[in-house]
Length: 177
Image (tube, rainbow, N blue to C red; front, side, top):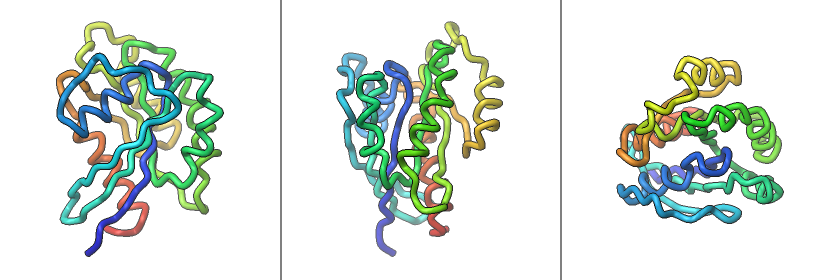
């Protein structure tokens, strides 16, 4: 069977860890000196899920307001999305409504619902947590998202699981299971 290609978009406020998450997934290295994303970064990685090869075209959106005008053109044709927030910054989760409505409006792909998951980043800073996991799970469920997971790009905890979860959801959505 051939490779299944997916466009995956990461979005959320600036500084929540989208770029370090993507970088850790791609390179297995944590680099805290990454610069702010300007517009969007684009990466490609293959992932093997249950005998199927998925090619992820990962679009990492800048979170700053001044770049939001670019989101509609970048999100067009997305097969899945990751809304990411920082577990130590409650406001980064509270902005989910704005991000989801903007993303869903921009991505609008036929009538199929695009799988979206919510990711709480910076799990290594658990002692500074301002978003209880229960609150995040509740927000995820209230928005009918396809899952919630917490991760740390610094330690690597659950980084692969984030991309495996959303890839499984995209495969299911594409009817390729």
